Image 1 (cartoon, one colour):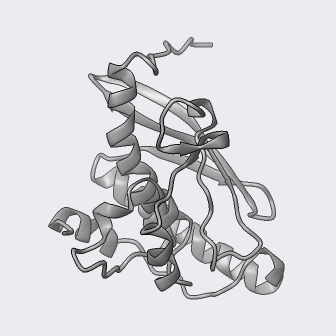
Image 2 (cartoon, rainbow, N blue to C red; image 1 turned 45 degrees about the vertical axis):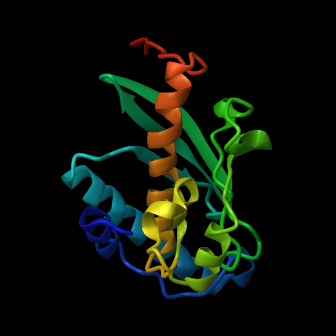
Length: 191
């Protein structure tokens, strides 16, 4: 069941319209504009709600994305690199988000630090093409369960996907990895 807070977060992220991938040249440029608009809105919404947890940027073509995500635990900020490539069949195929430095540290991750997406996530993504985007992938890729109702009806976009994929995954996995001593806090050096 989706709580009111989640519904409010989702309703604040614009749905995407253009069904185009990297091979679609001019249409891909339009899709990228929509992706950036969704990401910007999502980040602004997160900052307004004091829930800022990631930064992303892309290469010039918009096919490789990278940045940082973080999780606050016991007043300490744990920061991780995040990266993914846009599949050539995007948006039909969702991106696989990776946290490379966590590779091999949890069972809920594939080789290369890719976040494990269940068989439930893929149909959810497929039902929402082309409305889902990168932000949706970040959101849903890490925790699709939070954003589906009991009968698996969905209402999320890619921008929302990013938000609900990675965010909830971090909230579940990072505290567990910290408690087990697998992830430790790294003091930042000022320079």
